[in-house]
Length: 148
Image 1: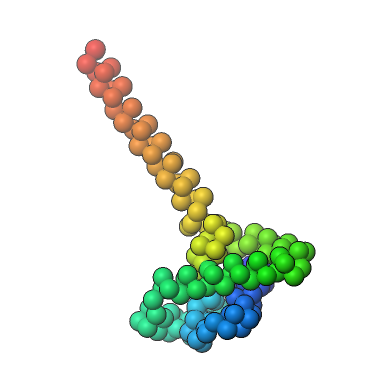
Image 2: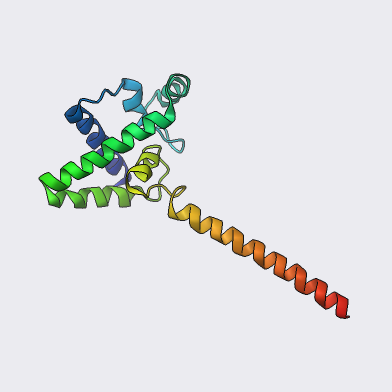
């Protein structure tokens, strides 16, 4: 699945689930599902983002969208187990992308964009290992210098 189609799949599932649950999504909230800083997807996305940052609580929004994503996936599993492959394909297609919706995907399913989840942990562990290595190098250099 292409990243554009994958993102559209996730967005359509959120919007459909909001309708099923009768959860209100404003036009700004719907448009923010398309947000990415890498390549604009809607002509007015930066204006929408400015309005969103001014008028909305991002934590509340992210929790609402994460809940809709989770419920949509659960509903799809119950109604059509084969639909799970669509979810896996969409998430796999976006795993190396940088889209705001992946923040909510991470909250809903415990994974998402390259900037979240396992990559952050891996990067943190690499930094710790490098730091320990530098400290050990300095200790050994000091010991060697003291003996010579």
